Length: 177
Image 1 (cartoon, one colour):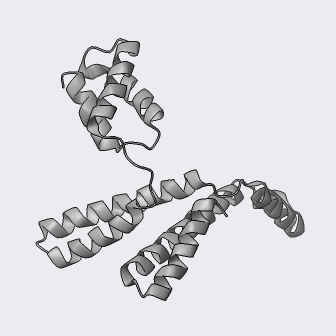
Image 2 (tube, one colour; image 1 turned 90 degrees about the vertical axis):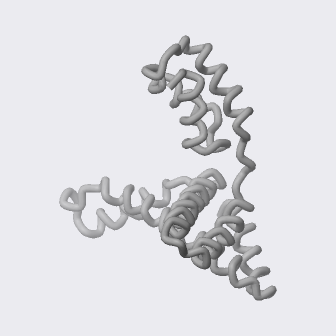
């Protein structure tokens, strides 16, 4: 179990003791999402083994071996799950705001705040602009047609430190699009 998972587990215990329903509900949801992701990763490995090639006993042994070879879930994997969960909450907030349901939007905002407390700090627009400008200069990009060259490099350098929509918007502005 990764250190971040241990922190989440301990915070869940503390939230249950404190009676913090929002935090308890959100952390349980996060734990379920992490568990689902781990199971999906195992299922993907198992799906690559051709069951028809082996006897049932051999197939079982291969599946056990392949799943044992999987690296343990790391903090980076947990952060990816947290980002996905945060994105879902943001989308729900937008939908509830458009549907004039402030009560539901507020509940999602509270959950989003809990999730964001476990995510690394995001860079602001000025920092993203600086990195994007550096990449644009290095690549020699000059027009919006060069976005395909610039975006992957900027996203790799920022590696989870900035929202993709913000990066895209900044790059588009810098390239005159």
